[in-house]
Image (cartoon, rainbow, N blue to C red; front, side, top):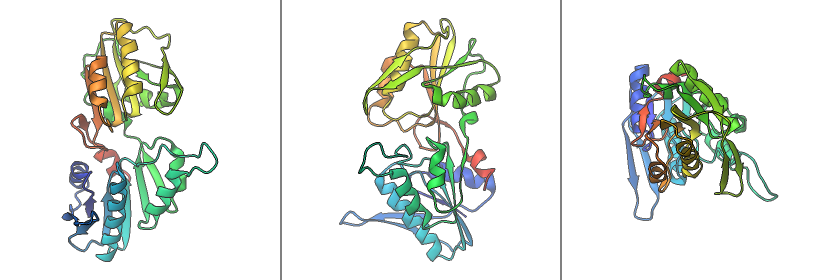
Length: 281
């Protein structure tokens, strides 16, 4: 049985259709004191809880769903984290700071037998779980919504660390070059972008990344490409978090289109990760 979190309704339905499993009925309630309740109807033998943890409240909801299916009699629980919140806090940078990804992973581990994540920011986070955990790569899915007639396309990652993701999208698309920007983080929200030597004039550029959060780095990349007379600039990301005014930042920078997956359900979620998740269930 597929058990959807409140923030992963579309993906859970797609996963149920992909696997042929039943889709559980779940009720969500909030009490006057602010506490929440997630109630699962039915008694599954095996449960797959699908829940993106985009907020602190979503983390609590996930723990409740895990506990609810156990109470309902599930003997085996798999937790699918399409987007794992706090995964970017995978290490402590100063003494006294938590490794938040590890703390969250340990909490999630208490209610499940297995974890599946989708393109975590760093693969290391899978090691933090106390149960078997694996990641799946949904990047090739991002090629599907791209137009077939892109002009001499180049798939560009915002930094060298995301080149593999850009290569995956390019390979799935079937043609094009791959390159990256040099990125230097000056502070928590200030990034300096240095363009690569790639010739982009007159070419369609697909800027790829695992996540677009505030849009600051991506919008700077787009502005540089526009200055260098790219024919068109498209953004493809696995996790379209698009916090606060990120979408308008990208529009002002001159993006032609944004394509994301349904790990985070947004208006730009053009393709589902259900097939790649179904392959490992």
